[in-house]
Image (cartoon, rainbow, N blue to C red):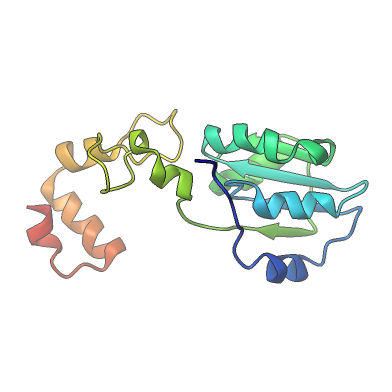
Length: 165
């Protein structure tokens, strides 16, 4: 089955970015490039910087953005390192940024990625497959108190002690 991507709030995002054809824009969470494709199509001499932790997303973007790749720079990285990623490429400013946070459907649909409960697969959950730390290691090797803290602090889970146990 062919994957069809429909970017969320596309019209609203494009309106909010108020794209200038000569501007420099950032998609900090490239995903399947739905937003990026529409941003890049509006550029003439401008540039679109696309960042993603998932190499599969970057590979797919080369195809999805084939008709506008001359305006696009694809970067394998984490938007948390945005300053360093832009500095290392000599980019000193941006005219707009977009971050569509979350897991993508292809990550959930690919059982080997270990994001879904739908299939029996190793617990992985790495956005970046080159990272060494997996969810399996966290769940099975980290101290119970640390798991409790994570579940309580980030998940606001009141049953964190029981779940961690």
